[in-house]
Image 1 (tube, rainbow, N blue to C red):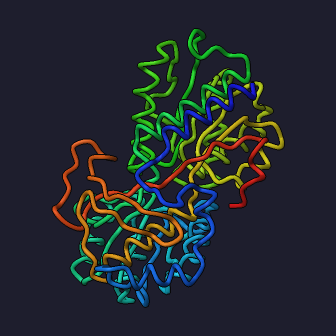
Image 2: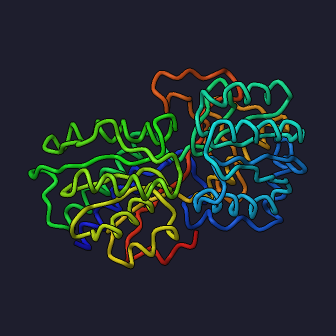
Length: 379
């Protein structure tokens, strides 16, 4: 089994997000560059306008969630070296109305830039347009806005890469239980925040396509999916409802950092463990270690959200300072690496890209966690 895990990790790394290089990678990038080199890169590269002194409103989907808090912690560490101010602004409720109120507050505060993970791209569209009209640079991270409502998006990966990662983790967990994913019928479902969250929904769509092509014996018992709206308590009750409706279900995929711990707690409440059901998905290591120690799951994954938060705030400040980019250009982010600007259709099929200051940059690496490596990470 260790050999299988090694092969799985190698496959995931081979699919990892290679559009950001330099000293990238979640381990290397977790520590900002020494202040001297970071300051020089932020203010002294030929043709690059310094970002020092800029203020970025860093807006999560909701506060109090381990993923978003870790992203803020990472961003704040980078900000010290870059000489920028990051105002972490959010609401404990993952709702459109709450996020619009936060955007409006950022506008009133006259920040230089906004870097936001949207709850609902359509729902916050008008508010982001108002920010742009007020002269504020808008960028996104984690969950995108409409392409025309922002400049750059810092994405954790393409839907295909992350959908494949979710399927690969599912396959590994099933095999650990003695299930043959290629020959056995596997009943499964998806549990995540909501269909309007563009990133999570795109991973589910990509994952379904991969399953249909490679694992025709798998059966989605609830094609409409289960949603818990990034509410921690609701994630538990929805998770229990899944197990009550399908007590013999083989696999539950939770591509959401609130749904996964909620589903795992529900499994423990109902007396399940990793030998009776396979549960996997995306969440920070610290949010899931307890469940892994309890024997409730075999693996899960994520990217370095601290790096992603830092990257999002950097590119927002970079454009707010007056720098201009187009597809194919490279942004050198101190302490993280050189990141190429990709077109919007790299993460959203059919999306158009403006001639300047519009596109996508990708994180350098994702990681799969198990009991063997989870304690190597602290976020």
